[in-house]
Length: 57
Image 1 (tube, helix red, strand yellow):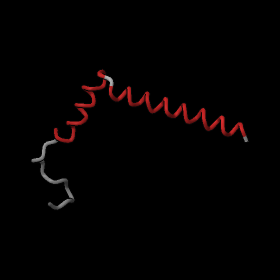
Image 2: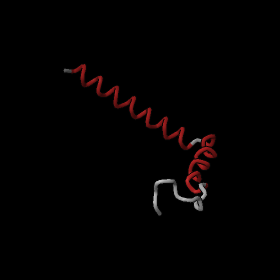
Image 3: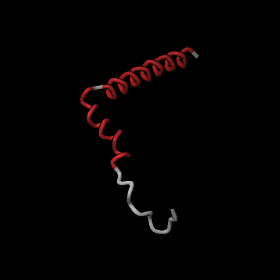
Image 4: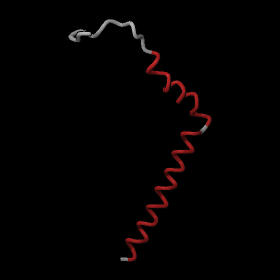
């Protein structure tokens, strides 16, 4: 039963390190321009387009 406890502890530490790595990647300055561009993408669409065929409204 002790082996499962050690495996659980190792997996917890690895998961935490993965989380820290993802946070560091997301907050890195190299990704800032990509995330800013992606954040504005929904607003870059033309709102004056006619409705798609088959749809009313």
